[in-house]
Length: 504
Image 1: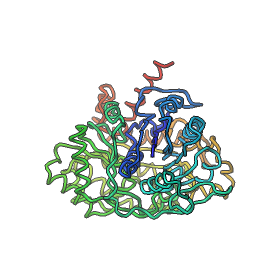
Image 2 (image 1 turned 135 degrees about the horizontal axis):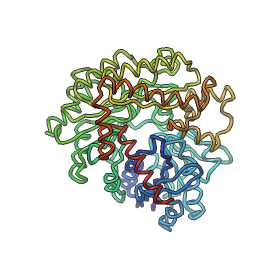
Image 3 (image 1 turned 90 degrees about the vertical axis):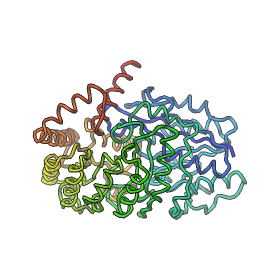
Image 4 (image 1 turned 180 degrees about the vertical axis):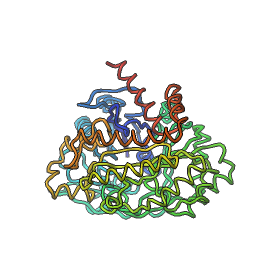
């Protein structure tokens, strides 16, 4: 079957930290690999990676990458199935416009859409766009089953993992999680401009070398009230075989000269024995002093102690992100954030003593948060600075679709229409200069002040306790070098300013 898999252009702004990341499309590369293994003919169009320095106005934002019209022209005229991804809800207005344009240009082709946003809102997507099928949850098995059925003109009814409209009603049957994840083929990077991403050098974490994104585990066993991962992955956590994982790393070292690996896992470290085995495998192969690896998405600290940290450092781990989210025990209970703050701080000390770069992620503005809770978060931020955390990230709360917090806001009448305006508010949650407050106690302007104050509190105390860090950061920004995510974000923001200035 002739299939086109398309990575849509990325919606960006200058100050949104999420849009300072430009990495190869890992999820779609996994889908591509499974479809190719099943014998299908797959065309891949990377609407972001093929034009990383091109920015096109899109409402109040920009699209980084190829314009929709150019993407549509590149699609094989004989295409039978078109696959798109939409992991992040704010990107949906652009992806919807692209999907509709593809359907108009190729009316006989079916369009399937995957990703976390798709799994959260399948009915709304199907009713408001020209998408034919939603791939729910993990996509590898479902995409292959759907393509096989369409190729053989078999019925789709009751196919696990697929949502679609049948006789005017939304039909969907859940698919069980893939347990044998080591049998999933490695991502297929053929025809994907990996080298362009590496040269552009804006990975998820700090840019420490020639970076490649990877997955070491799948799923997360926790159910935080604000997180949408349970919709996509359920709460089952499955790690890969460490030998297969390191084999993949060595493959990228040979093919792409990669030496810096960014694990995009939801929660990499759940089992102490697994992370030690993974680190030992790297060390035993003599790679510990040849590579670096990072956990930029954030991980749990509960399974990390000094021994674990020591093995991770020997294996090349240089950057860790913890996600306490709040310094208030009251808010942690409300958000169902099962974290021991004292243990996190101890694990932080162990990381600092091993000379690792360490980040802590915080969320302000939860609808039930009080000002006293914000002050407790600032107190924890100061403790992080005292211990030696390198950076913090302060995000404004935003209600992702079908999360527990989202449902509470719907019941309270705060969310009534899932329009593009709502998607925009989520996009601005990751923008400290343009936040939208969902807490009636704080206005948008006050929320902006609280976020910026959080950064000021951390860096003020960090530079007070370790003044050399200020001069190191200034030097790195001037030279374009990055040793932390903060420096990489600033570097990318300056890049976008230059590119946008040229196109003005």
